[in-house]
Amino acid sequence: MKCFVTGATGFLGSHVARQLLARGGDLRLLIRSTSRLDNIADIAAERVVGELRDLDSLKKGMAGCEFVFHVAADYRLWSLNSQELYDSNVEGTRNILQAARDSGVRRVIYTSSVATMGFGNNGRLTDEKSPVTLSNMIGDYKRSKFLAEQLVIEAGRSGRNVVMVNPTTPVGERDIKPTPSGQIVVDFLRRKFPVYIDTGLNLVDVVDCAEGHLLAMEKAQPGERYILGGENLTLKQILDKLGAITGLPSPQVKLPYAVALAAGVVGSVVVGKMLKREPRATIEAVRIARKKMFVTSAKAERDLGWNPRPIDGALQRAVEWFKANGYAS
Image (cartoon, rainbow, N blue to C red):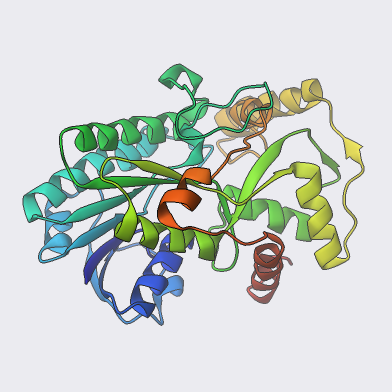
């Protein structure tokens, strides 16, 4: 089983690579010349230096491969140059699909995001059939992932053997960047959560999420997509769980939406545009937070045999890993 994996130096991708290796996979990993290699230092796999915008490097990496796992993405809720997100997430995915077609790859497993789903304010759980359009996407990250997903959907409609997984918010060890979700844990450990806002996320154990990718490789129907989610929790519930794990106090004051939005304006305009530094809060992030991103993974559980575990263990492992690697100081 020869597999080409993008994003293996990152958080989720490193877990996908490890599980493939544990199942006897022969791996070829795409790495950039500037990538941190901490997450794959102990992984026995061939490495190909290239990037998503370099079609030739992708073809070189996929040569002779049976499966392609496209896990890599530019996952940032703020950037000085938003075009970078579209170049990586949209054009990079276009190149992956073309290289896979030209290389005769058997199946492409594409990692999308629950961010591309349609979320309402009616309390209903979002699933793969919830209506959504590009106009519902807030911010460049969501828009870029939505546009990339359309490329994959169209490839599936044209008869290509592509499948898509839509992870929610993975939590666990090896979140080296950290991702925006990992930053919640880091900020809590650093006592930077004096208040909270009324929002909600679905958290999934990164190990389970990686397993969902392998199940998609084995069992998914071509052209289908599957939400990989764990527990639906409010931000307050997440912080309370972190408080129970760490012994640190969980915030008790809820910040009104109007105040949060004002902080987002200051972050976007003053810190981001004027000072050209990454803001702690942005207008887009606050607008996103207004809707609780609660989902159901019933389709993946039914069709793939996927069985995600409770999130507490993943939060515990994330806390221990961040502490052990100096993120909490």
